[in-house]
Length: 441
Image 1 (cartoon, one colour):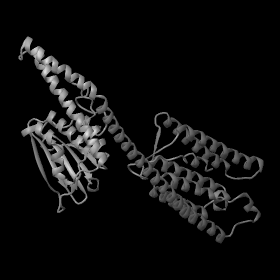
Image 2: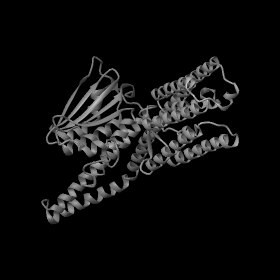
Image 3: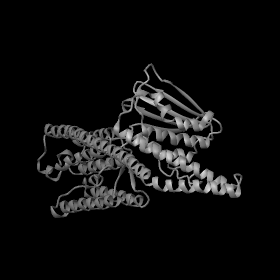
Image 4: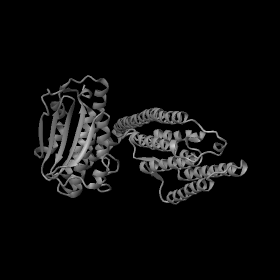
């Protein structure tokens, strides 16, 4: 009679962001339908055996009517299963409530709480405690208690009552008390264990996510070191060839020719690449040695970005100051923060009309760096996929891959920080970085 209850006793997914407060339970519709049909077949067989095999008289027509209602519900679930693969919490509560009421109806027709199968009232309570939240379990406990109280006074007697056998009212009250206490105790105990298990699963999932982010950051660092090593020789070759080409072209076509200008630009870009690779190598060695002198945070930032700020010239505006009464923290140079800010400043330079603002702040617990521009701001598509790779309004244009924000976020998260993107109310994009103070030294 309670087989349909167990059809919902399936694993509940963990949500690393919301812990144990989940709004949906994932179930297998085909399994639910099959188990419910099996339960209805068992109920029908039991009723046929009691009526025909044992020859008892009772309200078997009404009992078969309840089984028929269960079959109709199963058919309805089968139709829904063709279009939906998720069962919401409300639907699961309604299904468990149906099972409680169906069991109560069958017990009403077969002796009330004097029927030994009254213990099956515990089944929906255990299922709810394992799969649903605390309020849903409390609701089902109250529903079971109400049905049990009604069945204590209202029920059709069992066939052997005609022979003069009847359970004392005190004994029935004891069954009622034991049933209610068992529902409360077992329901709360199972819910407590299930809730702790869901929290542990959520914390494990969150830790796995952080480890994956750390792995990505480590991979990026390894790739950067490998690139710096492997690109050295090709860049030296290109630099030598371009330096030899410039004097030869100058004597033949003059300095005003477009080809000569392209060769000069090639020399400049090669030199720029060599500087970037040397900085990567220097920062990696400095990070391994860990011998840098700690400086005030704002001074450390300006030192790291000195060459980038010089290239931006008058377009960049710098401001710094505390967000509360705390003192400015000291910090060693952070290569991860440098590369992230350089990426953000490059993006801001591409989109800004005239001004780029770099705002540095700090509190008792963390430091903040915000990069703002007066451009058009982020598109809704970019904001919707914040922090995801291949996410740019310029993806595929002039070599842009849409990896800038993703790489910046990965580098900041390697410092246990957070990155947020939004559009300013007055126009333009804002990217805010937040890093704990204890990661500065």
